[in-house]
Amino acid sequence: MIGVQELRAGIIFEENGNLLQVLSYEHIKMGRGSANIKVRVKNLRTGATTDKSFINTAKVNDVSVFKRDVSYLYKDSDNAYFMNPQTFEQVEISLKLIGSDVNYLREGESINVSFLGDEAISINLSPKMVFEVTETAPGVKGNSATTVFKDATLENGITVKVPPFIKIGDKVRVDTRTGAYTEKAS
Image 1 (cartoon, rainbow, N blue to C red):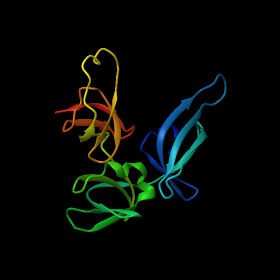
Image 2 (cartoon, helix red, strand yellow):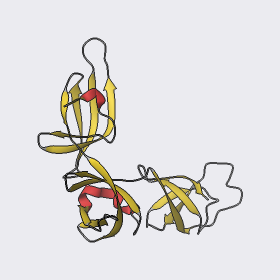
Image 3 (cartoon, rainbow, N blue to C red):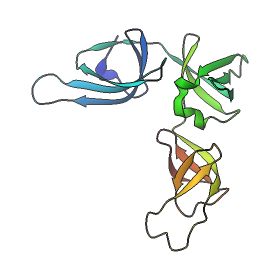
């Protein structure tokens, strides 16, 4: 058992038979009385997100999760398939569980996966990844004085807003948590 004050983004715990991963954490203290802990959690089996509220002294069941790097192979209509590079054992994870993170997977790339026993329960993407721009409009001279952005399609099919100086073939760094452009990559 762990106290709810120890919950932080990324921590996985069990409640009523459900595996829940903390997405955000907020400690609220209002005047007199005990503090409240509010967390946004994702159910790792169904993919649903909900908000939970606990009193400051509450405890939740800790879950022993280990992480392993695996190589992404491919996806079909229901699952994404990964391979352990040491044992060549294949692991499948439901696309419902992965959610929109599937857009950031590239064939052959190493991905960190969380396991509960033999069951793969979530993927852990790098916070920022580099992608090549495959389609965008040319920049217009004189637009550098204001914060003007244009649409660019990346090699993974995602469209992001980029500054006007980005052109086709440039590599850009994207925040995988928000899907937003962060900087031009070298």
